[in-house]
Length: 192
Length: 192
DNA sequence: CCTCCTATACGACAATTGATGCTTAGTAAT
DNA sequence: ATTACTAAGCATCAATTGTCGTATAGGAGG
Image (cartoon, rainbow over all chains, first blue to last red; front, side, top):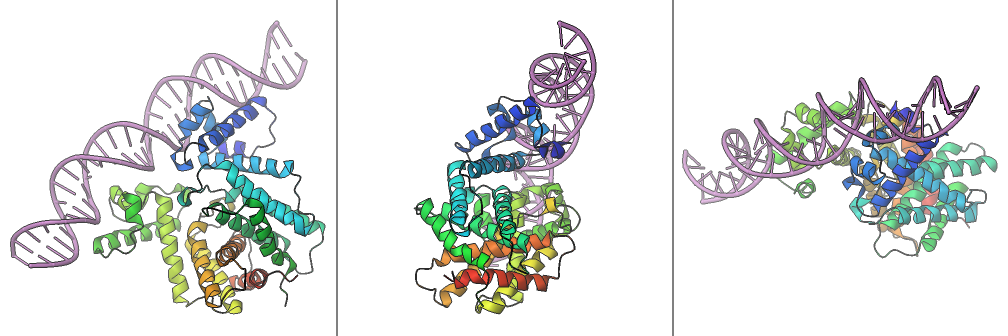
C-alpha cells in the first residue's frame, strides 16, 4: 500500500513523478512561511493543487514527505557540488558545509523548538558517503566500517545542527572547518 | 498554557506529580505491547485511568510525553549507576552502556522502522555530562566545549542506536567499549 | 473543622487524519 | 486512432486530535 509506493523511487510514471514533485515543492514553500508542526496535510495538498487523497497515495504522513523531500534535495546539493568522501581533509569539510547550507536553506526560523526532524534523512546520506569512502580506501584492520561511518555521520550532523540553532552564528565555512578538525580524529583512530 | 505547565518540572502539587507519573507509566507499559506510532492519546489516558483532557493539561502531544518520560527515566538510570564524565576512559564507556541499556529497556521491538525518536531527550543528557566533565577538567585552549560536548553526544547516541537496531547484536558491554575506543579521539583532538 | 484555590473529570464541538469506493483523466502500447 | 491500465479527483465516513466551559474532587492553610 502507501508505504510501498513511498519507497518506489524508481517509478517512471510521469503522473507519479509530477505529483511527488508538486507535493515536495508545496511543502518547501509552506516551510518558508510556517513551522512544520503548524502545516496540515490539507494545506500541503491545497498548495500543490492536488487532492488530499493523492497525498496519502504517496506518503504515509507529512513527516514521510519531509523525509523524502530532504533526502532528494540534500542529495541534489551533494551531487551539484560533486562532494564525495575521497580525501579525508577537504571532503569532510565539504560534507559539513553541505549540511550547514542545507539546514540554512530549508527552514525559515532556526528557533530552538522549531527545528525540523531531519536527522532521519540527512544522516543516512552522510553515512553512505563515509562508508563508500572508507571502503574505497580500505579500512584499517579490525575497524567496523559501518559503525565508524554512522558514528561520524551523527557527529557531523549534531555539530552542524548546534551551529544552526545558535544565535549570531559564525559563517558556515568557518563552522565546517571546525567540524572537520574535530571529527577527523574519529577516522584516524585512538592515538594510544 | 500546556507547553508552560509541561516544563514546570518543579511543581510540588501531588495531584500533578501523580498524573504525570501515571501517564508516563501508562506509556511505558503500552510501549511493551505496541509501537509508538500505533498508540493513541486516548489509549494512554485510558491506561493511566485519567481523562484525555488531563493528558493535554500536561503534555502537548504524545511525543512530548515520550520526551519527558525518556529524560526522567534515562536520568534516573544515570543517577542510579552514579555515572559522570569525570575520567575519560571508564566514564565514556559507562555512558555508552547506559544509552545501550536504556534503548534496550524502553522498547519491545528494535525493528528498523519502529525506532523511537529518543535523540531529543537522550542526547541533551549525555551532552550535559560531557560539558560538565570538560569544564571541570579545564578544556584545552581554543576548544569550544559546548560544540565538542554536543558532537560527542551525537556520536555516542548514533553508535548506540545503530547497535540497537542491528540484528543479532553483540553484548552491550562490548559495544560500549567499542564506542569508547572510537569516540575518545574526539576529546583528545587531532593528532596532527 | 472550614475555606479557598486549583487539578481533574466530563461532555461537546470543530478540525484533521486515515481510509475507501466510484468516476475521470493521463499514459503507454498497439 | 483505440485500448487497457493506473494515477488522481471526489465525496464520504469513522476515528482521533485539540480545545473549551462547567462541575466536582483534592490539597493546603488557617
